[in-house]
Length: 68
Picture 1 (cartoon, helix red, strand yellow):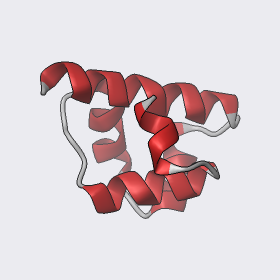
Picture 2: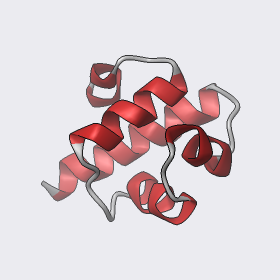
Picture 3: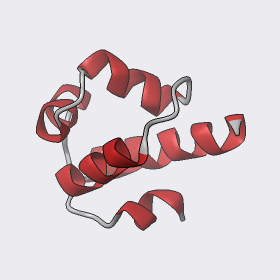
Picture 4: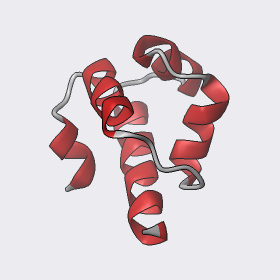
């Protein structure tokens, strides 16, 4: 599970930087605490499916795009 959590965090960071969003901006748009978003991107926290959906929506992508 740790590898998947880290992989997911890397995908979120890549999508965020491609969208020219700061971590704080993404967290705000997704309704997630900025500190928690940092944990997600570092792969130290595994988000719920609801949070995955909110992150993807804030990035303007499908949730599945964060798992490819």
